[in-house]
Amino acid sequence: MKFYSILLALFISSFTLVFSQEEEEGPTPLGPGKGSAAIYLGPVGGFNRAVHSANLASFADDPLCPFFTNGSSNGFFFGAFYEQILGGITSKHSLVGRIMYSTMPASFTKEGDTYPSLVEKKEGGFTTVLSSTRHSLDVTYSLLTIEAMYKFNIAYGLVITGGPSFDIVLKSHLLQKMELIEPDNVKFKRIAPNDPNAAKVVRYENNDRTIISWDGPPARPTPQNQGVSANSIRFSLKFGVQYEIITGTKIDIIPGIFYNLGVTNVNNVESWKVSAIQAGVDIRFTL
Image (cartoon, rainbow, N blue to C red; front, side, top):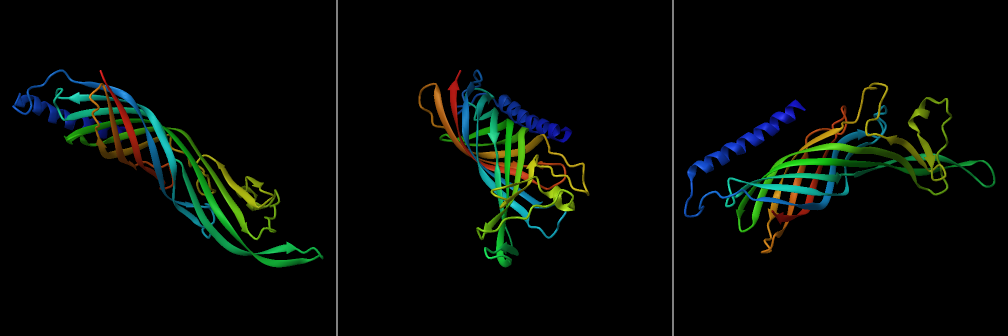
């Protein structure tokens, strides 16, 4: 957390320097002095297209099993924001703080191999058929987000914005499955409880055609690493473009699109970062 505190301090101090220099310039024909700083409040909401960049083994202790590399899914965010004009009412600079509830889930899918399987015949005995499998990984990831964004009004309502984002992870959960896709008359043979591979199975579903191999936090311990744990904090850098629709009343509408670049990992062992393309709207009320 010390590293993130230093980043935030540098971010704030650099813009403080810019605005202090502006104050020294005094009024101009295009900027008639610095009046009372404007304050804005309002709700914010929008859509997340979450992207999880990872390299996760479907079975961590088996290098021959497929790896999950990139997953994505749709999420959302909503909350409230506070905007403070810096340098006076005519300034183009402001700081925006947001606090939001946000979801950034993901689904990974990987086609498995084709295996020979034994199927019991009606007339007795067994026959061999080819069966295909599919591996899937569904991730639930919800966050309490706190943002500190710098905002610059270029011209005619077009705005660029950027800054750090801190997230407290409220829920992170992973559900991993291996499913039989075809043929329809094949199912997995149940592993005996005393078999060394029994630890890889949480439960069987769908008439034994689905094996749940993990149902828990996104930090799967292995014989080589029992100290793995899920991270409770996410840090990211967010930047984007907004357009201010000034309605002539005390309510303004500000749509925007952003890229939220994840910096920290989901757990303390694997390279697993969460980023998102975000589209949202600020509803701004003037105080």
